[in-house]
Amino acid sequence: MKALWLSIGLHVVLLAVLLSGDFSTMPKPLPTPSAQQAKPIEAVAIDKSQLDKVVNKLKKEKADARAAEKRRLENIERRAAEAKQRRAKEEARIKKLEQQRKKKEQEKIKADNAAKAAKAKAAKAEKLRKQKEQEKQKADEAAAAARSKRIKEEQAAKKAEELRKKKKAEAEAKRKKELEEKKRKEREAKERAQQEALIAEQMAAEMASRNQARRQQMLSEIDRFSALITQTINRNMIKDRSTMAGKTCKLTISLAPSGFVTQVQVGQGDRVVCEAAKTAIYKAGTLPVSKDPEVFKEMRKIAVTVVPEF
Image (cartoon, rainbow, N blue to C red; front, side):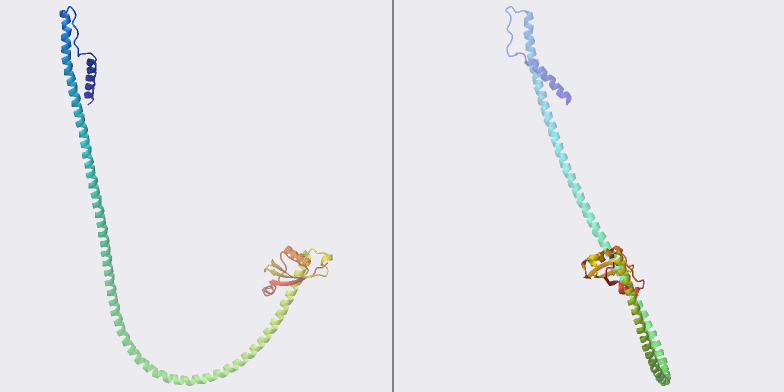
């Protein structure tokens, strides 16, 4: 193809050179024509004929080249159309194969599911068969056991009747003996109840006496710690005789087992004394408390009257 276009180019250049001259009019003869002057005229005629041949040849080659190019383009378009058709056919074939593959895959899934269902059904049937077989075996064993039990029960009933008659006689004798024993125990129980009532009455009196003594002891202990607490408050109070003399304040103090003050409630009394006492309590932080759990339980929340001492 490259050589063809090179040839066409060379011919076009040659044609342009040839056409640049004026071949339509013949050259005028000289006044005295000679043999030498006649030769160029003949040469021009020959050149024009050759030029026509070249031009015709070039036209033919150009026409041939155009025809060849047209055929080449038509061939390319034909091959492109064929390739497009082949590609469309291939895509259709691939699509069909994909559809077939999906169909086979779905069929395989259905077959697998059917196989699983059949296997499960078979397993269920086998399980049911074994269950019925076991139930039959258990029923047979139960029937045999029932027969054996019935025979044993009949034998046991016979022995029981004999034993009942024997025990009835023994029970009658035992009943008489138990009746006598019961009367004896009732007499003893009555006497024992009277003794126990007497002892309980004595113990209750003694317990009441002890509780009274313990209560008195606890109250005395609480009073002692109340005095200790008021002394502690007085030690920590900032007192002013001119404003506090002859005045009091009632306080309710909540305490932890360690004596730590958890809360102070101000009651009736002089405001100045109450504020000073409350400040003194929190300043002390902990107050004297009894180690005795019962005493502390009574004084966990203790009421004291603070009288400033000067």
